[in-house]
Image (tube, rainbow, N blue to C red; front, side, top):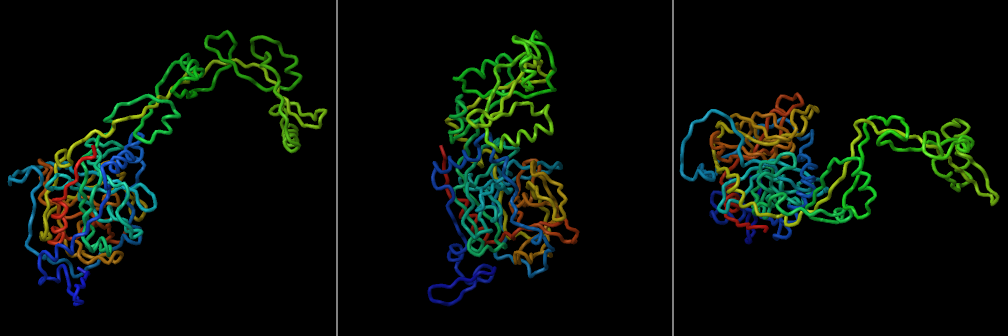
Amino acid sequence: MKRILIPAGGAIVATGLLAAGLAGNAQAASDVASDPMATSAANAKAIAEFWADNNGAALRAAKESNVWDKSDVAKLQSKGGYSSDTKPGSTAPIGEEKKTTAKVQNVNMPKTIGKVFFVNSKGEKKWCSATSIQSQYRNLVATAGHCVYDTATNSDVMSKWVFVPGYYQGKAPFGIYVGKQAFTHYDFDVYEDYDRDYAFVTVYNGVKLGGGTPKQVSKADWDKYTGIKDAKDVEISREEFRKGKLDPTSTEAYWVKRGTAPEATGPDYPGAAVGKVEVAEAAYKAAKLGKGNGFKFGEPVTEIVTDAEAAAYKANQEKDAAKYPATVVKDARGNWTITHYYVQQWYKPGSDTKFYKTVFFTIEGFAADAGRLGDNVGGQGFAWNQPTGKPVRVFGYPAAPHPDGNKNYTGVTPKWCYGTTTKKLQGSAAKKIEEHVALKCAFTEGADGGPWLYKYSNAKRLGYLNGVVSTFNDQDGNGRVDYISSPYFDGETNTVYKAAAVAWSGKIV
């Protein structure tokens, strides 16, 4: 650790790995930093509605976290490495409190993983990866510290922070879980020490999307409504389209999707519609009255224009008289006028022209309680002070391109890496990291915050959280990420976790 504390007496006392002489309670008090997120159920409900509005539009608009730039993605440096500060320990996953054994072969994605969404200090909608983890009230999420605290501006916790387990394309199958309280190591909260780039966040009970009753409203009322709302396009007949367009009391919007170009026809063709074609004054005067192609279309239309507008039209007329056939004159009062003359042109719509109406709904009573996070998706166990050289599975939603611009991932579906951790590759020159563990893996940003699971059971989809994705590194210098790293989970990490694991959050509704 790099931090020191200065007690009231003024003597400098080293803490963390160097503070073997400090009492346990004093060390625990100094290690844990906690910050409020959504401070009330009403505030949390508004945050959930922000992300759920317009059928999850904000969720779909969010982009992967991007705290690492190309200069940060560099070769890890060999440093002194971590040292265990206490004996190894672990806390069992939800449902596995009684020790069991199982041998399996297939690789299955854990139900506990998902994305955390937030708005950073720039107002950008972003996301990271995360997992549900064991806790007393089954309400705890683990992710990277930089996915909770805005390190770009050294400000407080991210705004509108939520966890969506099993997220896919704007959908929240288990509900949206709003962050209530964030726990991290004091050194990350205050000094942005990436050796402590982890966070544990308590979340309120989830709320379900679309749990309320839809109410059809007008487009004007729909635009003004600030809660959850939806709109649905419905294909209709041409007759219904015409009728709806003429109904001033309609709460629906009518529109047409043109297909192939309309074909010219006569007025007697079933379903034929009339259009107008502008012609010169002489052609209009020679046209007949009545219904038919080339017959007069209404009365001439005269507009008063400025001198400049008249001059511009006359200049265009000299270049293309067929395209600009109107009559331009100065009347007795000295005003310039342009008079347009039209004749009829009947046509039948293209064969694939379609007519639609858009129906608008507000959804009241949206926030149906989805229950506790751990009850719905389970929770991973927790392990600390584990030796390196042990196999882990890492899960996350990588999305960003490699530094060379190549993009292998979309961020749409979760991916996994498997390998053994190493302490040979510890530090990052970019973030002055000294105590990370590394894993050979080509994940890119979007996977940050994703869990490193030790002793992962593919059958039960559970293991022990022993790290979170923090950095992305290029060991062979070819412009591609080939290693990821995590802070080493030691006794101080366990102290932060234990403080978060007993914090209550409650319901939004």
